[in-house]
Image 1 (tube, one colour):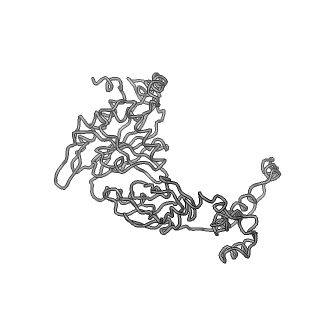
Image 2 (tube, rainbow, N blue to C red):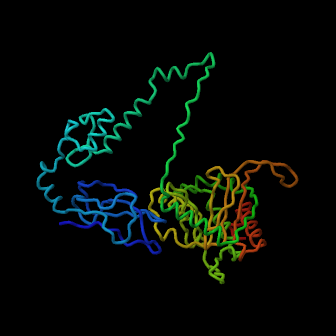
Image 3 (cartoon, rainbow, N blue to C red):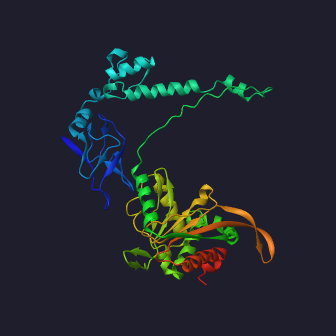
Length: 405
């Protein structure tokens, strides 16, 4: 029986998706619940599993195509799987044809151009036949092997040079490559332009002395990890400090809706996470009710699921305030961009030992620049500056913050 593989119902606010990758080929045997392909939306990656075991008879939509909910992606033949199980000998892959002439015209042409023999290349097509991709992949591997320096060449390059030689540099190829934006990259671009064009964004800066936080982490990090099973990082301190500022200045936790200001009585903190697909901002719900360990575990989970493309639409929806940490990449100072409809975002940066004046004496302290971008339509400079100063004070005296005094 032929079963259609269809695009599942897409998340709310997502009208279409792009076929990112097929994990199986036509003719492959597939099992029920096996992930057949990934669909990329402008926010998350969706897996499309097989609803029945069988043989993938046909792929109707190739990678890169745009699809909508209900579109047919391919066909699974369930009876073919039953026949394969009943006749193991018949299911065994045929030996790939060993001569060039028995290949398809496109493969024969490519083999001739590259001077290769079909007998030396393993085939992945139906019945073990060669595909154009098989030939190209094999040719690329051969080029890589030839390009690897021999031991003698390596020794020669490592030997000391007694005289300088000047050789003319080969002219550059000036190659260009045009590739379409991924859906998430296009969505990021759209959101950044939206923030720039629809808000009156300003940024205020300050610096924070992290000596007290560093000493606290150094003293308790081993016990913390042993008890809670997660490392004591910086982010939990910054989340707690940001919440204190939001409680003190509720406008920083508000958003604009037309001519109205919406004050949120909860603290859903977005944490910017870098992934191969781009920057995503999963949301930590009710962060004010979480312990330091729960915050660290949540952030670690966000990072792991972002790298594995396992974040859901619910993870990325909402948020009343965001935190981004450019310091992990070595940023000294930057201006974070608002994440609409949020009205403020905190930017963390690299920690650098710098000389500072403490009680009239010069000391070397671990210092970080902080940046708070805000929507000046509803947030005045006073609230922004004092809010950032509150974060600074909480971090410079974390014991007082954690004891709620």
